[in-house]
Length: 358
Image (cartoon, rainbow, N blue to C red):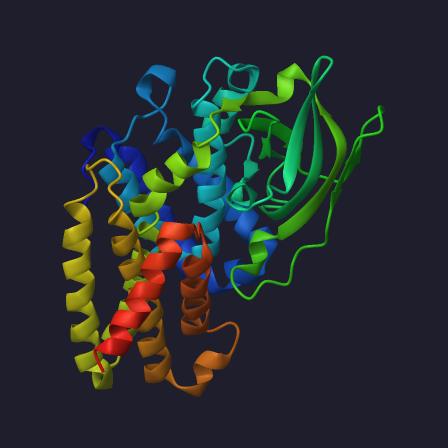
């Protein structure tokens, strides 16, 4: 799979080599062992993966959207857990880049790009009503109160960006420590034990209770508009197709290795390439709503190719450490990741269309 950005080729080649020679042989263990996942995440940071999407004017490589999409496919094809945590740091970094004049960007951007500091992010609660985390302006900063229902990267990352709803409906983005902590003024940040997730458990996802946590000016990333989550979801619809496409590609590799699955392999390979071509034709377009249908088709393809691999392998694929078992669970993860209203509708339509074809 070729990359379009020639200026980034040496860096991308190093990342590809690392994924192929180090991550791929241990991907099933990385899925279960947080220490191995941390090592791989840090190694990618050291190689410069987080510089790729940062504009050149800010010290990054300035890769185009197409190059970044292809890299996301390769990450997910190799290890879903690693791809997921890379995306967490990239999302948090993206939020900080939206506020380049903010104190957090000024203080931390260089280290974040180099991977010397790794940060998580929590904003999915903005899709809920009421929003679980609220921010109240106070003397010299903000007070945060509420809960964070989904926060990945515990013990992998040292801090995280939390999104909280302000009284005027705008969104405060604040940098918080990724530990259980209590402030001298009484603020409390309490993290749960890692949730026993079926997919990518090594990513260490927790929930957080936030009680009167004071955010000083130096920890304010910035303030976004009230419709920030709507705009972000729209921009991310097609970008989010990369991970399920990578997952499907990995299942195709399994099918290709089994002669008795030749028909399945050719069927799903052709579907993969048709969808790939459609997505490629849309990567430069500006967020049309039908991108939800393309993302849903990619997720559906990931689920079905993993199921085809499961059928091909048989009972041994039920073992937790089996590659097909991991891919099947990763396809489930992509089904619920970033699940906003347009994507949910598109996924349901995919299922109804398939039902109607029988």
